[in-house]
Amino acid sequence: MNRQIPFNKPFLTGKETQYIEQAVAAGKISGDGEFSLKCHRFFEKRYGFTKALLTTSCTDALEMCALLINTQPGDEIIMPAYTFVSTANAFVLRGARITFADSEPHTPNIDVAGLEQLITPKTKAIVVVHYAGIACNMDAIMQIANRHGLYVIEDAAHSIDSFYRQQPLGSIGHLAAFSFHETKNVIAGEGGMLSVNDPKFVLRAEILREKGTNRTAFFRGEVSRYEWVDIGSSFLPSELTAAFLYAQLEQIDQIQQKRIALWNRYYEQLTPLETQNFVRLPYLPPWSHRNGHLFFICCPDNQTRNNLIAHLRSMGIYAVFHYLALHKSPYYQNKYTGGNLPMADYYTGCLVRLPLFYELGFDEVDYICEQVTAFFTGHQRG
Ligand SMILES: *Cc1c(COP(=O)(O)O)cnc(C)c1O
Image 1 (tube, rainbow, N blue to C red):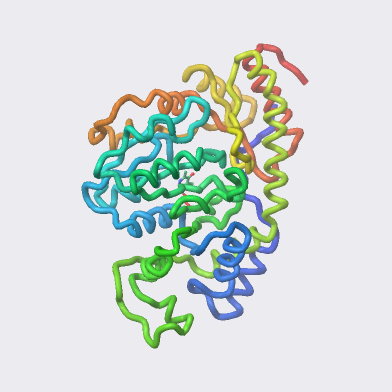
Image 2: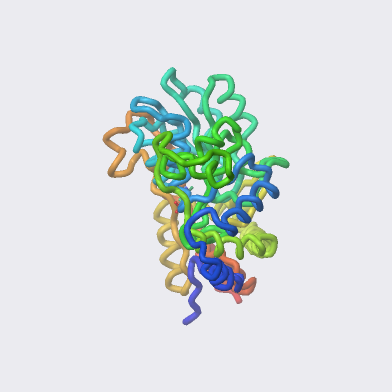
């Protein structure tokens, strides 16, 4: 069997290099030119973000969130342990302590039932991650945050074009961070975006992003010169990145449609394995939506998961595990003073992601599902 199915393959719409050439020809290749503005307008119009600001990565957008809420040494930030390192690093860089929350039994998202008991007088914010683009219980989270005067930041890296009821993800918390890394639905190589939903952060977000200057207001003609007015860094991407991204955004409906169709195909074909209790499929809460960001299954234990990955690899299929829960990471384990997080450990040990990318064929999904099924039932099919 020499069929090879990679885990991911970046999809190009075909217009990317044309738009990059256009930006080069226009002689404006630093940040916030025409293509950046087109991207900002696209997001603000389609998803209702008060302000969209492209950044060089989701990591940078999260660092901007930490700065915008004035994270200070000693502040506590609550977030799930089952997440990417950048979610935590952004706040650790400002001296915060991380209070890691467990995941839900049904989804890798933050466990809302245990959330309120993690809040102390030092808590400043709750960061949620909509794992696989499946929405956290945002009404409950916003109610808890409002009751305690906390900020809510959405790590929306997986969540483009996904929804909590009718609300786009990334439009609900005070701030949100998106990623356009090549593994995400819509890509720019490396790239990200801050979405600002609380208007009080808009002006300062522009300043932090432009090295602590009011250059953005200057370009709009609102001030006569630009000066150093606050702390900041260089968080904005070049026009080359924005031009690439805009080509992708023009095709977003087509990209989402295909990814969701692939996701549904996996779900249908693997349902019998769930019915027979071999695996657990992603659970979609009633308020949530799927955006086809990634398809995962959960095995009953770590050994089975690792054996499944090895079996698929031997059949030319590249399936991969995901996060190693951060409370047990080499960097944080000695600093962690919280309790056991059994569900975060469970997803660390038992979750596996199957290939999902725009150019993946439905016949390839069928083949992958046959191999997963064969692994569990011992029957070779097809
Ligand atoms: C991909 C990802 C990030 C980081 O995105 P970059 O754009 O690579 O910085 C952050 N959080 C989560 C949950 C991610 O999946």
